[in-house]
Length: 153
Image (cartoon, rainbow, N blue to C red; front, side):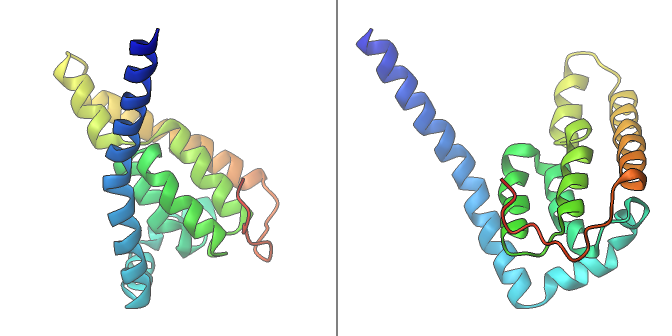
């Protein structure tokens, strides 16, 4: 019983450490990018990604992080952006909706392709579903531009 508990605790600590190794540097890079206005340039340059969903340009970076790195790593960026008041409630909700269907696209596609799945079909269907669902929800949501999501939980 003690061995099982010890293994569970050590496994949990290793998992938290693995996530922290990525999330903490990502947060530091994000803060530096904000301080030097790099994030503004990226968000403005790529805002065409979020415009169809009626999201603000500030939603671009958190959405891309979740899309590429997945929910575990993207959550830190999304929560920090929301707590800082950079995202409206609508932005936060729509990022979540999109990422439910389509997150960690590179990693997941490679893993499933390695075991025989059609990677392009998987990537295309996940992306199409995320776009469709997010578009429908974005068109039916009330606009909360003045309501910032300072407490996303």
